[in-house]
Image (cartoon, rainbow, N blue to C red; front, side, top):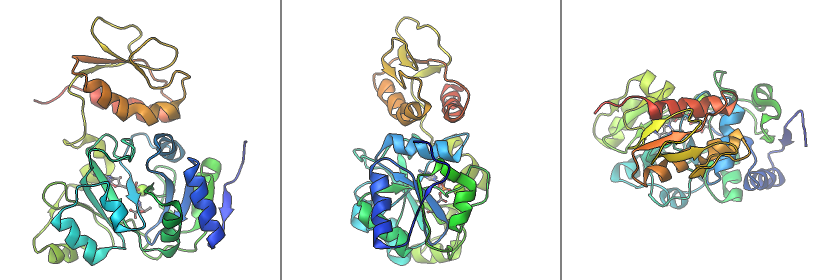
Length: 317
Ligand code: TXA
Ligand code: MG
């Protein structure tokens, strides 16, 4: 069905359940949090997560924050630490995101982490967000609900103006109180402030009883894909392969004979949804080179090619 505008949902029980139903069906729902409106998708559904990147028009795969209604559910997906416990007790629910190691067997999409072995998680305080998350019953991946490069939305009409029918539904819960995105703290190693926000560095240091390292802004926000910790395969990566060489691991796209196919029908959403998982799977076979079919340089293909060219770039030892 071709639509020109998203479905508008009311901030009622019926609206919250409708939002949860759309998420369950793999759809995108924009909803208010205390910081900004989020563009939500089922974090366990690779295809739904790929649609977030498509709707935002992001030229690269920035990792996403996964939102939960309660701490027990959240803790199943990450390796919890004493420092996470201190910060969670002090600031959750609220505008704080923690980056922790992923549980190796978590069903959260690898695309959410953009191939990293860490996961950003948050327990929002906004009643509407919590009601939707409870009705949905799982983790919801949600970046700010705006096209890439535009200003973050704090009203439902900002979302409609920026994303239009690229989002399936928008739940209007009024203005967001905080208005800037959550503070992000990395806890996978020593505590590091990855993005400043409403909760200050001083508050965090006081709660932890020690200072935080501060990561350089440009590194943390504009280019997480370039962080040293970012997943790069052990195998070499050969791009734009139109034929295969002896012994190569073959990552195809389109109607080609190969080991794993990102999308036999040349669907870029499907290709994005498989990208990180398939790179991991081929790499686990321990071969020397992963050869990849050409991917069209349009729409989501731009983000896919960005990631692949990083994976293929010469490595430091
Ligand atoms: O307030 C917020 O945090 C809003 C609302 C909707 O919750 N969300 C938000 O998401 O600001 P987004 O996608 O605009 O920003 C998420 C940022 C990424 O750009 C990245 O810098 C960082 O979070 N991030 C996410 N996962 C990460 C990870 N595993 N490691 C390092 N940084 C991560
Ligand atoms: Mg944003």
